[in-house]
Image (cartoon, rainbow over all chains, first blue to last red; front, side):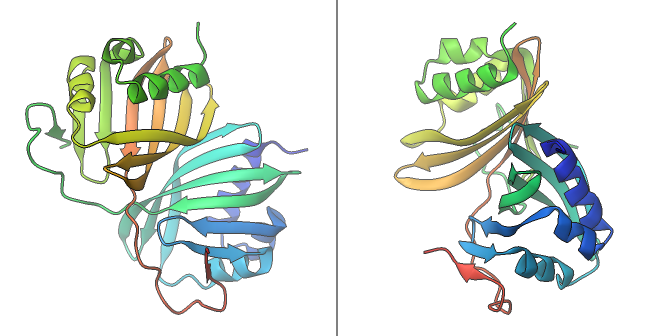
Length: 124
Length: 124
């Protein structure tokens, strides 16, 4: 059976390629996608493929870091939509070689709090 | 040498325990902590220990998921400060049994976008 790392790599490749048939073969029939920040959930392969297929804008994903261990993986991507890059992070569970659960995070940029300039610098 | 998973478990335990001497022994002398959302960076073990030691509020951390592979790990925590829980996610690099790099994310709650009620539900 294909390993967790390979499953998530295929998830990324088929998503970026808009190869929806192949993307569907990476997902468990009862895959559960959740966004803890908004409390939203998408249940089932068919709905999750449609959600991605119909996602608006001209978007691309670039994997920044993939960590896989046992049935779990964490993926940090740079997600660019209409030329604006944002960070995306997913925690995945893989069962029987298929993605069965995704907890997705979309951290937005923010201004750093003031007051710790003795410790903190800004990246150039 | 202690494995990556054990290093990050010790990182969590000593942080939650406010055992700053032990917390320091988990960090490389030139550890680099960065928050990509704000572009801020803290460099060096001493400054990073002080930053955590002086972090305001009554805070606690609970690990939700830890994924470790080779020299890398991803940690999803529930971070509670003054009774308010938020999600925290760190991507770690471990070198010679010490944490050498942390990329930390603090995704804030948001209202889900409307328009995909055919696909998306709210978690109870």
